[in-house]
Structures are given as structure tokens and as C-alpha cells.
Length: 510
Image (cartoon, rainbow, N blue to C red):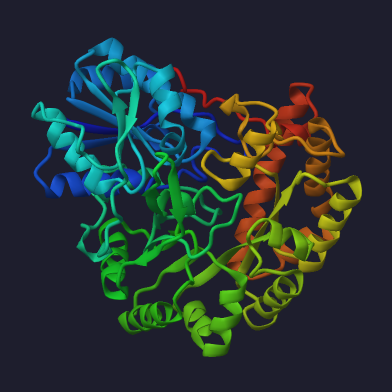
């Protein structure tokens, strides 16, 4: 890697025990998307994704020192890993203070002023959709330009005070964007697990944003339609855009033919917004004879709608094999309070029942939120009963997370409900928001209890006797669980708690 002006980096980070070097390292869509856009406009760009490369900090620092790029950029949607990005920039400035550092992603977008005040190693923060803003920033930075008119950035004025420029309008035509620069990534290092869903797979997306504005969700806000009011505060409206089915299929074909990526992990906030798009895309895939399988995040109400239209059946025939649904809560009132009133318990039960009956080979994954303000021990029992009634193949239980920029975060911050702002604890397992009836320790204990009690021998036998895809998923779960349990016992620790504790890769500092 030489003659690089702009270097995009995903630094070393901690892992959940259930994610190891061969299981779940995913292609990071942000890096190849930005790289492709810069390259299309003549900028020499490189990518370093440390996790699949098993590149520790010492090797990363040496590599950056050897490359000597003009700009180093890193982004983060999750608060948990924000410290690694700051650590990266600190090392970069130690190499050369002349290297310009740029942060991006949901987390830095909504805390930009705080980070620029606290961390002099960060020069700029790009907020919102990145391609056009980052390109303009790079061109200006490399040519000694003026930053005051670049929309979508936050930077320091001469007196050190952070200044947030007005937001940039969203890109109207996603088909105008180049295919992500997958060739700059170590594609042979991703999806090496024999059993997990991402085996020989890659992430991909056809759409950006969402039609919904759930109060707890941090994904839709990054691609929201942003306006700045007279007080200088950002106002967000949900906005959904998509590439055409034809343009999307070109990318699918490229991943399959060039890199042998036959499993597609669609990371769209909601894959199935537009039934016309889904219908057309399914037709293209089926007529092509291309064999792929898909993981998607889907809305239950859209699944029911598409089933009536005959679209759901086409999607399954075209490759849909794994659906993730946000089941969230057993109470309709909670859906309304979380601005997800289009959902309800009866709808979710009907949706899962439909999939089980008509598409029995499709793997169903659901997520549930615990630790809402008025939760009690009885609430947790009802969540468990609801999960068991739905009976998904996998049920994930997570305490409510106040993601910066969300309505949950704004309310919790204003009312003093946040237990800690140590982002190292924002791991989707540690309770961060106070409740009226339970301590943080009780919420954590009860959330663990849900996972323990959901898993059972009948659950496992039913899964292992399912189709080939489902069987592999359950085998993977069993193998990793046994490894963690044995390791925990050897270290005289309680096995189940170890499932949630983040661990350092052995090569983290290498």
C-alpha cells in the first residue's frame, strides 16, 4: 500500500465471546462506500480493516507511519468503540501532527462538539451521509482551502470553539454512486466460519434510511433528512431511499462472481419497505439463475403485506433464508411509547406463525428490549412468555441503550436517568438507563435470566432437526457455547456471565 493520500481505518477492538476470528467479521459498508467515491474523483485512497487482518495496534501504527497519508479517517456508529477511534487519532498525531484526522458515523455526528472540545487529536467530524461531504473536505484539506462553507462538517474555529456547518442535503440518486470498493478490503478474510450465517458472505445494502423514527433506534438518524433550526439545533425526519433493483443486482453479481460471496447480509435498516422493489429484484435474481442466500432486517407488518401481494414467496424463492425482526416488547402500549405504534403483539404473533407454517426452512431471529422506565420483575416474566410464544430460532434480549442522537438519549439525559457516560460500557448488555423499580444490577441479572431460560433442550433438539441452514446455526451455537463454558470453568468463572463480557483478541496489541 503506497502513494495513499487518504487512509480509511477500522482499528482493533474488543469482541463478544460469541464472535471470534472466523465467525462474524463483517464487511464494513462505510469504508468501501467512501473509498469508491473518493477513488471515482481521483483521490488515492486505501483501507485498513484491522479485525479480519488480525492487525494489532503496533502493526497498525507502523503501517500508518510507512504510508504517511495526508488524511486518516475512521467512523463509528456504536458508542462502545468510539474510544478506539480516539486512540487511533492520538497515535496518528504522534506520528505526524500534519496528518489530518476525520471522524464520522452516528456516534460522532451527534456528539461532535463534545469530542472536538475534549480531544484535540480530532480535526474534523463529518455528520450525516458521508460521500459528498468527505470528498469536499478531503479536496479542501489537501489544497489548503476554506472549510467554512463545507456543509455537513463540524470543526474548530481559530479560537478553538467548535462550529457546526449547516447539514448537507441527502444524495437523491443512489444509483449515481459507484459500487463499493470491495477490492480494497481483504475479502478472503471475511465469512470464514463453516457454520455461521455469514459463511462465505458479505454485507450489502440497497437502501439508506428508514420510514420509521423509533425513539430508541440509532440507525435511521444517521441517514435522516437533517435541517438546522434558528437555534442551531438539528431537526431530523425519517427518509428512505433506494438503489434500483437493476443497480443492486449488479453489485450482487460482482460480489458473487469476483469474490465468491454467495451469502448476502443485507444491512438495510428495513429491507422490505417497497413491495414493488422487492418484487422486481426477486424477478431479476430468479431469472438470472444466480444462487444466493440472504439475511435481512424486516418489518413484520411489511412481511404480512407482502405475503398478501405474493412478494414474500418470491423473496424466499430468490434467496431469503434468515429474517431478523424487532419484536421488542409484549405490550402494545410500549410500542406506542417508543414511536413504533405500527407494531403490536397480535401482528408479531401472526407474522412469526405465517413464516413457520409457509416457510419452515427460514430462520427467524428476534430482538427484545428490557429495562424500560417502568419495568418490574413481572415485566421480565411477560417478556419471556411472549418470546416463548413467538418461539423464534434465536431470541436476543438487550437492555435499553441510550444511543446519542435518539429521543431515548435526549430524554434520559435531560431527566438524569443515564447511569454512566463511560462508552466502554455501552455494550448492549450493560444497563445504562435507570428504571423506577429495579437497580441496574437487577436489570442486568434479569436480562441474563431471560437468555438462560429461553434456551432449553427441546429448543435445541427442534433446531438441530430442522433444515440444513438452521442445523448449521444451532451447531455453531453449541460449539461456541461449549468453548466458552470450558474456558470459564478452567478460569474459575461463572460460565453464563462470560458470554456477555467483552474480550481482547490475543493479537490486540501486536
